[in-house]
Image (cartoon, rainbow, N blue to C red; front, side, top):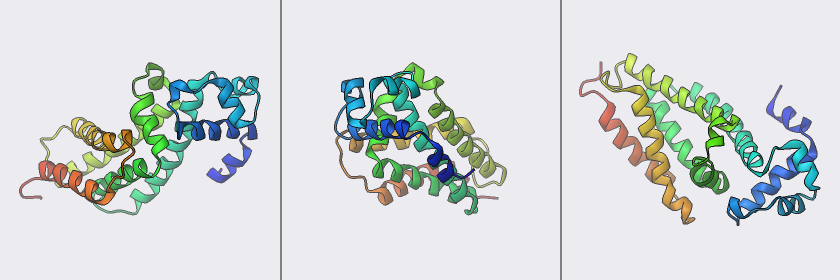
Length: 203
C-alpha cells in the first residue's frame, strides 16, 4: 500500500488532531499546550482525542512518527541511487540538516521535547529513528569493507558522533529560530568527519 493510500484511510479526526498539535507547536511550548486547547484548535471534542491517543504526549509521538516514516522511506529511495559510502554519508548529512532547517516544528520536537522523555524511548517514533541509525551504520561498515573508511574506527561510535555533531550544530539556530546555511554547514561537517575517518592511502 502506498503512503498516499495510507493517509486517505486515516480517520479525519485523527488527522485534525495531529495537524492542530503541529499548529500549536509553531508558537507554543509543548508543556503549555492543554488538551482543551488542542481540541478547540482541531475542532473536535476532548473525548475524541482520547479515542485515538493515550494522552497529549502520545499525540506528539505520533506526529513525529508519521513524519519520520515518510522521511525514512524517502531516505532509502534516495540513497539507493547514490554510489560510494562517502557520497551516501555526505548526502545524508545534507538531507538531515536540511530537514531540520525546513521543518522547525519537528526540529524542536526532536531536539527539545522528546529526547529528555523516558517514554520516547519506548515509542514507535524512536524505533523509526533507530532504523535511521542502523541505515547509517550499514553505510559506515560498507565503507570500512571497501577501504574508504579507516578500519580502526568503531562504526557505532562514528555513527553516534555523526548524529550528535549534526544535532549540536543545529541546536542554537533551532532554539533561537535563526536560519541555517545548509550547504555550508553540511560541507563543514562532512569535511571534519571525512578528514578523520578516511585512510591516508585508500585501497
